[in-house]
Image 1 (cartoon, each protein chain N blue to C red):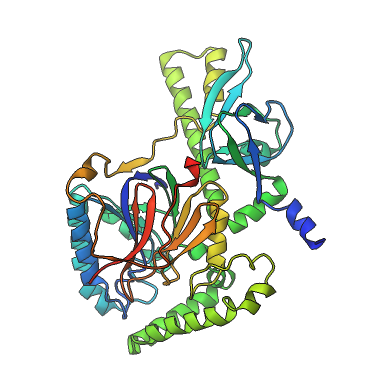
Image 2 (cartoon, helix red, strand yellow):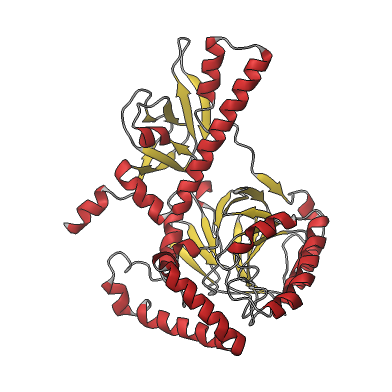
Length: 190
Length: 256
């Protein structure tokens, strides 16, 4: 139907698939798309005189290319699918639509950018304190903090070992309510 | 403020509305926390745990101290309570944070087993809350006065929502009339389909399941492609909760 064309063009609902090893985004490209990893693992690399350097690995929920979308700058690194990968493609025109429909998405992007600034500042201060302020070292710090590397690990609560104490499957007296939709293998396992 | 959490075993409860004239959740809440201590799991309060928007100060004074005491005992034994702020307790955010027993969050991205689960109150996706905030606030306050006079009016409200849902969104004619919604034949009775659509939108970016509260209608929806939407309901009538165990998610009701 014709009325679908505009909504499709600006729709944020574009899933793209890549096989292992395929290039998702290339350093220097002027594409303004950003990607959210839905399945699989993406490797982010940067070219150097001694060959590509791996900067980070981005897993489910992670973002790639947000700076290109927000600032319309050429890509600062390349992204390759390490495994079979599905990404949600967000184009500039659909970005605000996406935020309107999914407002916590904007919060998570801001959180990631805030963490990146903090890590860069901390790394630069450590380098200054240690005297390692050569141009190469500073470049390395900036490049390694451009991506979501070394995010603080999710806060662990409970423990797999601890759960063997007493009942391991939780309350049994409670009825299972609702439409009894039980999770099958999560999509990540496929 | 945390958002990323990893846990193997966790229960999600919401909309206790402790301090609301109709709330009867005090005993059940204390018992649930006692059981969580015995059975070694943590708890997420997914919004509107405490009531400010429709508060009865007498009810608040009667119910809350004992519940807070039970929660403090829970956290002092090394267990965690994650508190996701809702719309009825948003003014309490600083107090709850300063109280020190809760880990406050705007939402949680939970990794449990190999599943990635979003836990969020859900009021941001309520068309009434977003499109008409002042009217929503006025109606909420008015309803609070009505509940002070006759708390049983709450049951009438829930029955009305279920009836409206059946006529507006669950009839065959309604499904055909709205493009794109004809395929979404599974939705929670009583709830605006906007919540299912919001869950679907979230699952597009790598969540296996979404858990909302806010609507007071507990239920579960298969979104297709392995994705699921759960609502943890409300403890104003019954005690539903979402049980998460190594990525396996179930809607349960507390046996009372």
